[in-house]
Length: 461
Length: 104
Ligand code: SF4
Ligand code: SF4
Image 1 (spheres, helix red, strand yellow):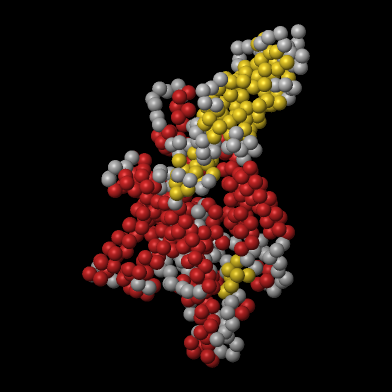
Image 2: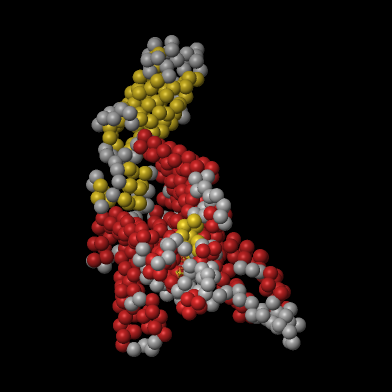
């Protein structure tokens, strides 16, 4: 091994993981992020406690197979809405990623949001970045033990509360609270509570940026949605370089605007240096923008050395954020959203099924009339008890008859089944097979209806 | 993860091979978990486990919760096997090759 070339090189397949100690920042973007944390987590922790029309406002009742979302009740038959929602979610992701990169990562991803809270607790108990680093290096003395214990206690309590709230979206949370209080929980509830709590604790407390780096599927394909007009967080190389600090800087003739204070590196939750260019690790949290703006203000240089900008404008080209791609995505998204809203609010809460009686074609009632027999099934998908009426069209003088004690009434979620007879004049129903429509509607709200098309056997002798 | 240098690097050792294996195992577990979650949502939105239990040829009676859980575990297991096969077939020859040529 005489030359460098023949020397075996240690190939680093894996970087040894180094703990990142993000420094705390303030600024306009950090304010927005905090706001996002409060709104999103506020909704998460508060919603299950809210009641709406006699039930929990948001409840995904899996055992009963129905979802309550405020005044709306969804059943498995409403699968289309779930599918639509997934498509809308996918399109929003395309739209926002093409517009401004990883907005989702920086502001809305549960991983980021919960990590923020966990870091906040860490700061509360262990102090700021320097103190935390020192504490970790230092010996296990009383100070370290009690600070670490306090942190763990806060983390674990918060994680368990999170697990409890999570299960509260699937089991009525007030019953769940009683169950916890009286130490009387089902195995599933217990399992999911601890599972979700543990996942929160591990992801937000320890794995943190590693989830984004190694586990997140979105992080892997988001690059494909970027183009040269996507707003990304970047360092203005032309303006910043040559970076210099201290004495060199004072003596230099033409220093760049970067004073090389490494603030942007210290605040970064994924531990990268944005000055090296756009990197896959960057979750677009904009902490470095805020940090650098503050530095620039102190040294009296214009802000925005690190800022949201596009690749084209960094290269000095003309840049247009509202390009065809964004407009097309935007239009598709708006259309999908309106379709979804319209479909949701105009949907019928009646699920009706008309099944012909298999044993007979038609029955002769008297010299003038015949009848066909069907089995009518109605499911009430609405939130309140409703009464229904049935009519038939498609042939002149169709008459629907059924025998029940209290009319066609169904409670929310109830499925009723009644045999019905539809009578017609022989003279009118004179072909072998006719097609008729059976309409079921609510007595109090005739617009809420469901129409079924069925065959009608006529008298063709 | 670059796979090419594995064969090129002579100092590629036992420990690293193990780490690659465990990493791929981890990936298979994690990805199959994610996909199983989506599959369960889509599948059980369409099929009621209680109904499936009624028409199934086995006669053990299971409730809805158990049905969901079983379905999820089932999906997870199968996806995991798929992932593991992919990982093994994709990687093993190269790492073995690396092992064999390690101390030439
Ligand atoms: S480089 Fe800046 S925006 Fe990206 S993750 Fe780090 S601090 Fe956040
Ligand atoms: S915060 Fe700004 S001035 Fe400080 S090192 Fe980073 S880019 Fe340079």
